Length: 258
Ligand SMILES: *[C@@H]1O[C@H](CO)[C@@H](O)[C@H](O)[C@H]1NC(C)=O
Ligand SMILES: *[C@@H]1O[C@H](CO)[C@@H](O)[C@H](O)[C@H]1NC(C)=O
Image (tube, rainbow, N blue to C red; front, side, top):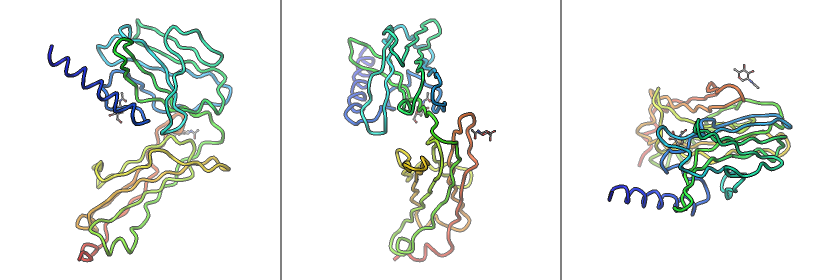
């Protein structure tokens, strides 16, 4: 009893944290599942986005919503909730037997290229659990895989500091369905990594670019250590992860310290 009170309070607190920043909370329990991270469609198409619940969680105990966010950092807006009448573009389809809640978007245009969030709410508790979101792109040009390059650490930095920064640049890709990972040998590096929260777009070519920075201590930056940057790209049908670049540590760099 006491424990469940505490966990409810904790979840409320997490939600408040999430709302006070503008991006969506991903720390709250994984109750709402959106298994499709990216989708690509052509203008004029009809698309259906799906949402389900974690094992053992019944959709019928919640009120289900679809939200959208135009760009990273912008507020999320409610589109439609369960049992709402369809609008010209949106229809919410609830199937409680299958624990499935869908959003049908018809006659898509470039304006529909946003991230859609499914959410489950308790009206009386004023809390909601969000899924991870599905980013939809209504294609405006042909698909192009990223070009990837790790920039060499700069001379000044290598002389004066105890760490060096490796910068991985992914560019000339479309759409922006990417994630960047770093590995040392065959182990993924999670710490000291800073990746842009979103890709930037060239207005004329519509191509995107994005960077990720990895800080490495000079002591670790040895010739036998191979650092690889992998840009995972979803091309509309396949996840492609062979766009990579790698760099080995440089002999003697650690001797520069002090
Ligand atoms: C949602 O995102 C988080 C953080 O990136 C991840 O750990 C989790 O596995 C994702 N959940 C689902 C259901 O994809
Ligand atoms: C996506 O990648 C697959 C596998 O490499 C390829 O067969 C397919 O043609 C690609 N699709 C596009 C739109 O580039």
